[in-house]
Length: 160
Image (cartoon, rainbow, N blue to C red; front, side, top):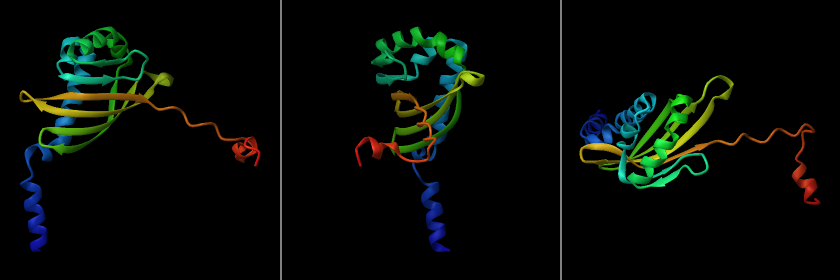
């Protein structure tokens, strides 16, 4: 009983930045979604730290620093808005007070054109608000089609 009480006390006394990591990360993701849906480039850019690094899946969709991020967001926002991104899941891990690592799963597009997007993010608390320091998104590559013969042709190609 005493161990359970001590464990409960440790969890309840955890620093707020640690206890609320998922809620804080979800808040940033939801602000991103609202800004994209509204077509508000300034609101999207405001979610990034001045020294942030952004890497999105498309060729040329990489930027470092607020000015470069603003240019990329203004260029890509119409397509992002049309894709209607949806947050599917989010897993936040506090790294230190004021630093959160986030892995997210999103969907973009509609119907058969829906694409799964994975994100790896680092959020930092600056000026009283959470901001993206690193925002890296990727689109998974489809797994290879199964071999219709039911065997591994790699061995045959190597001459084994």
